[in-house]
Length: 177
Image (tube, rainbow, N blue to C red):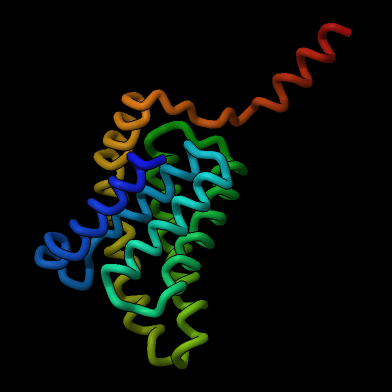
């Protein structure tokens, strides 16, 4: 749990310093890759709390409205978790698809929540211009971030939730009867 939090802090620092200098407005969002990983490899409660804290770290760094990014990240995690539970995502292309979809879902929730504070016509154009480059850069960086997070999970012996745990127990029960 705390290793992922530390990794999120490092991601926020990279996003706000190095990636901002290299890519400008079209920078990748490493926390969306982390949220996609959490949707695949964490239980809903743990992943939701981690996603909320990821948003909180962004707010601490950016000086924006408190609760905005926390809410957007938590909603994005829930959507990614529902998507990952609905489909069998184990291969690299399917994980890349999850990151790509999560990037678009994040921007949709970003616009939806930001429309509470500002008129939609002011924010829609600029947000939609940056969504595709961000999603593409997220997909390119996804293997590296997933590798680092899997390595952290192996170091701390973190087991991912079983996708078929309930089904297997029912099959065993019916097989013995």
